[in-house]
Length: 285
Length: 285
Picture 1 (cartoon, rainbow over the protein chains, first blue to last red):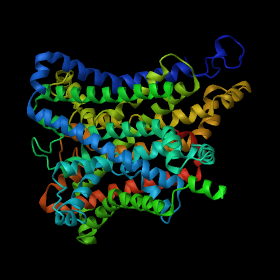
Picture 2: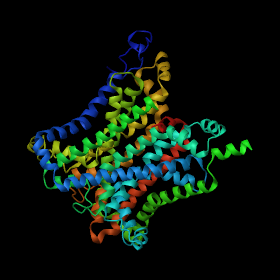
Picture 3: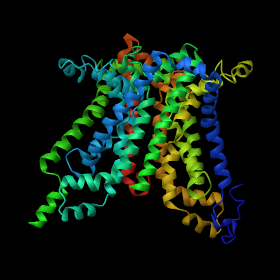
Picture 4: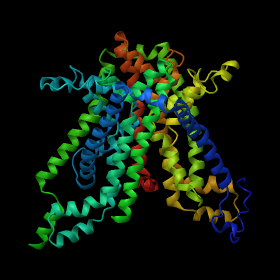
């Protein structure tokens, strides 16, 4: 259907009771075609290829200690980073929405830096910063803490890359949260702590969870900002996306496919579970 | 008495406030400000002549050209898609709409390495179309088309994500009025819809472009890393960084990418400040 074909001048016909605007067929057709060609078919091809390996083939590709370690590291690290960012993200969002302080606008403008700074640049910058002679690495080394080229470095990179999600999802909710409710609670004799636990926290909880899920999903798959600081030691600091890369370089397509599918299935399952939790929360909250 | 009590119950005590502000500033300084400063200090550490020599290198210039060319193809494609998808989703009611919205976000939860890999499985030497492509002497993987495909995949949702909530919030009244007054579909789109969404569109294009030029993981899988031929800027940064003699050059190229990120952030904040009311629908997601 072309954009002019819908005879938009007759707004009272039954067909147009839903929408008189033209271009539905064209825009939806283009959307579905583009989505299918670029995203859905390539991803389906990946899963078909994995299915072709059979249960035994998948098991053989996934059951090695190296693969399990890489998966544990990527998902465990992402969980740690998402947790850190949930706590500090909530704190940061609160500070920006409720308080005034010098430099507020500058720091607020910087929050989205991880979205704007290319990951490879972030990766080498964090590595230099946390290496033995770096601005932060040197004082930490004096305390006996080694960050660069250890799993700790991986978590640092993951925290960096997923930092904006919780802050950005929480801010609008905090801004819109009715201060009136807090006033009512206070008038009725609630202490500040009671107000925060019983009034503010339930209001922001769904947004907090959404932000944490987005942060987690980003951190699990992250590659560019991690590989420089990780050290990439087999069974120590080798993340799953790097292992996929290594399998591809070895032309071990079966191994790469199996690992990629395992990662996708695990992340989709976690995102789906969080979605269910949100729906449940909306119904019973 | 009562009023002072309620005021205390609405705000945190001053020491708590200052601790929260202090933690916020410290966290953002450590994770955002210091990495950014490291890039520029390292880039200039060996002096301006070394800096400019690094940027004038033939392979580096080739990588800049390739990065710009990739973005020039990928960003308009995803912009066109974003507008079409937002038009269909925001202006019409149809079955499966929420599924479609979820699918559009899918590339955000796919690791960049997997995003690159799906195209290797399709078009690589051992891929589904590999034999046919090599028969006809068409190169997709380890060439420009593969780099563009991988980049388009990872930047796929950006424009659509900004436009869908914005256009949903604006409804269809203005378009209906224009159509009733006799404007055709395209005219209505260009003269009524476009002026309403232009700042949101620019916002989405900005973020899409930053990611397209900075993408590392996905491009790394499909590029083949040929200096001066299939190296984009982020890949050139990696290659120089891993070469012991080219450390300063790596940071020189990285500083160009950091500058891109910096400009993106500045423009983004300018848009939020100047046209915030026209972007408000964006804040809810």
